[in-house]
Length: 338
Image 1 (spheres, rainbow, N blue to C red):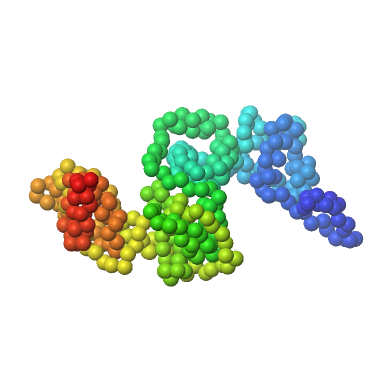
Image 2: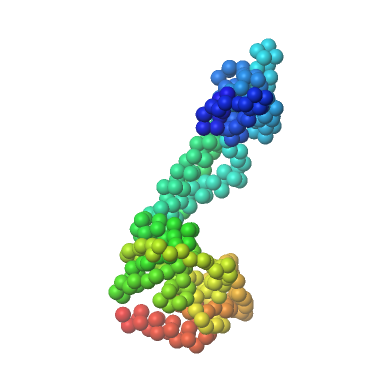
């Protein structure tokens, strides 16, 4: 007797019942759909024989297609088989509502965040497969909304695709790496690292890894990796490691070993913009009589917050700690002098 498993046949001992290796349910239902759509009027017996399952399985599949997917399938006694009561153009592999469709469109637009990475082609291919499985009416709405939404980024880093792919694979499979890394204005340096996690922070990619030279976790920029090889060793990522916890006292990318109580005063002109966002879990905002505000944070590193304060120009004034006030004054003076 022929078996659906691998298309091979095997002999049965006398009295032994055949074992049916059924196809995946989705594949079965697609075949049922195609047979009904071609007006072949298949019945449960012919379908069960063709798909090598029981008639009960066929009836369950058809009930699912009718009740869950809304396919207009019914049994026609005159033809002793199933038919569609009205034309069905496509097989509804994916059921999606309007809110989910809009989220899908956002995901498609967000693909530009991954331009130049190994994810670009893979995500684009996956999205096309999903879009192709949508009913025609849904595809029309998707096209109508396409011009209503966009993403735009400036100053994107250029990451070599091959290097990025190796970093991803190593982080996922816990493979130790040897990298040739070049910081800005410095000579390249070899480092052996255990890649814990890749993170996209503010549309930039960062690698958080255990640096064997520093004997601590460090942040690396994939775009600065010149060469990369695996050492042949694997590593165990600590169960206690969580990037969210690791950066809980950071304002952006970098974590420090200190503890700073930050206070920044913002003018009335920009106060509404500061208040409409949650900048950090520790933030507290104090309203002042003249319409300005003071923002309080607790951080372990000053470089990220310093750049952010400077981006607000004269509308932001650092009040504490002294280290932050002094560094911003030096930076502002340097801008004037140059």
